[in-house]
Amino acid sequence: MLAASLVTAMIWAQAVAIAPAESAEIEVTATESRVGYEALMAGDNLRAIAEIEANRSLAANDPVRLINLGIA
Image (cartoon, rainbow, N blue to C red; front, side):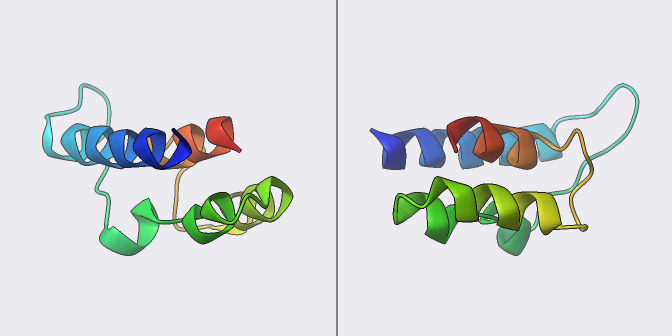
C-alpha cells in the first residue's frame, strides 16, 4: 500500500511539474522526487521526515515534499 502511494505521489508530482502552473513553475528532478523515499520504504518515518525537512532544494510548498511528509 505504501509503495503504491509513493509511486502515485511521484507520478502526480511529475505531472504537476509538466503542467503549466498559475503562479510559479515547479520542476521535479529524479533525485528530488525520491527525497525521503528510502527511509519511507524502510518504515523509518522519523528519518524520512528529517531528510525531507533538511532538503533545501525543494520549496516549502513542493508537491513531492508535501506528499512524502504526509505519508511519513
